[in-house]
Length: 251
Image (tube, rainbow, N blue to C red; front, side):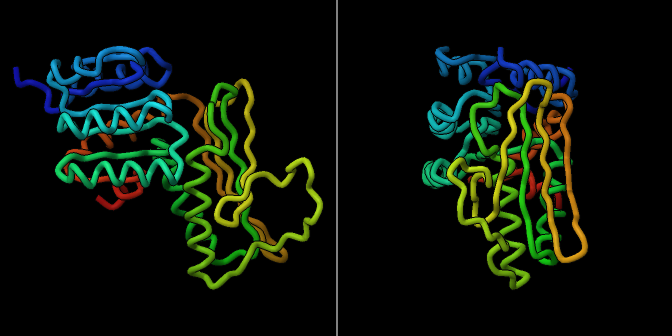
């Protein structure tokens, strides 16, 4: 029998996403779980197991160390860990530049629907006077606003700029409790954390006499798995740093 093409190492294997990733990889005909480790385990076990791709769902405070290990070991890696700020992205870029033959993908959201929704929002942003984002996640999520919402805010801001629009109209001058939410690239982002939710994104647009809402909902973590598998298959073909699944939409 021919060995699976992708020998996958799962970092954070006993976490909720790690368990789901391991199940999806096991069920894929062209890949297998070569090794699974958790925080505190010896990273060398990944190399010893012959991993060709690493998938990381751990914590932003340690994910940079995992990227450095992967680059040094010459193993392509997919980072699904939440909380990757622009500063961390810049750091990952510097590390990647030192190992240009290794692929690194940092993915804020693996749901294909969320990626498409964000692309649609970038188009809509050119035509509406106002834009805001509401992101809703489970109560155990460590970061706010979510990486998906931050990425969406940048896309919307770029769309507004391309459309020649200025600042979003907002007459608020008194907000001592932060009711208007965070501001990302000029776009207000509101975060909800609640039991019973998984991952949900609403992008709201308005002009005089009309509104448009673009919403995506992930009801189970299984919804992220097609995107994870797509990233595993693509990362080795994309040396250097890739941020998000958007680049894969046109492949």
